[in-house]
Amino acid sequence: MRFKLTMAFITLIFVMSALISCGPEPSSPLTTAPPDALPPSSSETDENGHIRVPEAPGTDRKKSTLSGESVIDYSNVSQGYVMLKNNGSQRKLKGYIKTPDGMFYQYDFDADDKFIVCPLQSGNGTYIIKIMEQTIGDLYRSISKVEVNVTLDDDMLPFLYPNSKVNFTSSSECVVKAEELTRGLMTDLEKIEAIYDFVTENILYDYKKAKEVQSGYISDPDITLEDGKGICTDFSVLLAAMLRSQNIPTQLVEGDVASIDDRHAWNMVYTKETGYVAAKIAFDGTWKILDSTRGTILGENVDTYIGDGSSYEEDGCF
Image (cartoon, rainbow, N blue to C red; front, side, top):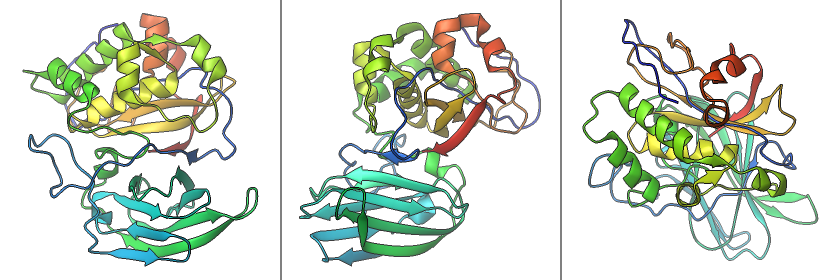
């Protein structure tokens, strides 16, 4: 399905996205299990100026040796993220973040001395950040904690950097493909069109995987690209990685859709340009929904399925 672009007037905001049946409910609705963290870098962007690279310079850092060596690096909270790691704990670990709006996010990680990147997705305000260690069963104790007052340099920054849920680097195949697809295009809307069309026309929905996927599943956008198929999480992570690599703010959203029994994932994307973007959805200065998983399956009928977006209920974004 091709986007229908119409240039208009005013500031535009828009969205993209995905979802279908995404497997079982996680034990905690906002629990994630990040892959290996992105390596620190000496600059905020890569040599091409496209990819924002998370850093852990240690300028502001909370360290604990209560169990292993735990580090919470909050040097770059103004950029919209913190970095966590532990080296040496013999137990299961979780990063725990309470946001200014009262949301709770949990991130599983290993005691392997590698940083994980956690977004500060709720904007300005006070965040409570902890590294938790399992004691018995579902019980955890805090082994490192810091309370940070965050003022973002830009509200969009948490949705431009790679993180533990949307993990990519300048050498990722999905980033290379995004660069190829957008070469020569002048506007964000044109880039969104090209990337959305590529995903919906080349990635198939994997019904078998949807039935078998386990709680805590983390998607690798390069594997989705290579396999040419995936579930809603795979669609939305791939889109987020490709669009962020083009400096287009993109949320990975998790939640529920009234017409679907299982949990889902989709995207919200922001652009300052004006116009219409596919599925007859007008963007008028607010974040809107465009469901690329359903776009793949339903084609031109996806606009009827999405409607006014009221059936989509978010409970977390990354």
